Amino acid sequence: ALSLMVLIFWLSSQPNLATDFGVIDIILRKGAHMTVFGLLWILWWYALNRPGLVLPTAISFAYAISDETHQHFVDGRYGSPFDVMIDGAGIAAGIGVTAGYLSWRADRARSG
Image (cartoon, rainbow, N blue to C red; front, side, top):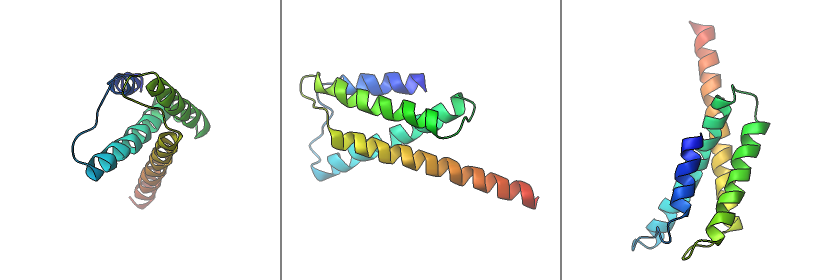
């Protein structure tokens, strides 16, 4: 989880990650936000020995806020509350993926 946080920090330190792909660029960047923060939640959940939802969610969401705050101070970047919401959606997706996996695993254990 910490390595992913370092990668996020490094990417947020780059002055410009945009491409010339227009709308596709926006979709890819917002999708990357969701994917990375969903993965961050999963990694924290696992690293903390599966403690429930609250602690990994709090860590991941606090990091999303700090990431956008950090971007506010990087030339060519800006922090966005909208991006924090997208990160939150990614966290929710990470919770959903984990819940689906656990359900699938439980069903599999019961049936065989």
